Length: 121
Image (tube, rainbow, N blue to C red):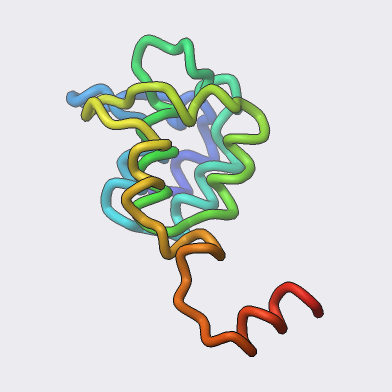
């Protein structure tokens, strides 16, 4: 499938019957390497928060759930409003992150010395 997409870039923005583009479908199936590959190939403007299909917000939220934070950071740096944009499932990134305190340093239960070494190294 990826080989075919390489021959025709328009396939990267073609929606399935549920309205999802390939990178969003890959993220919904937790295909992490495929998500990274397709994310770099898909035109960045597809992920704009004001997009009617909400591909950017849906991708962002799926990435948060899957823990693919390198792509999360890239998307949020380009489009900060994605964090407060509703996705196709009526979820918000800010809400999903609030339910995952372990992704923040303050939410990790390190013993004193581990906490100290991560802040003083």
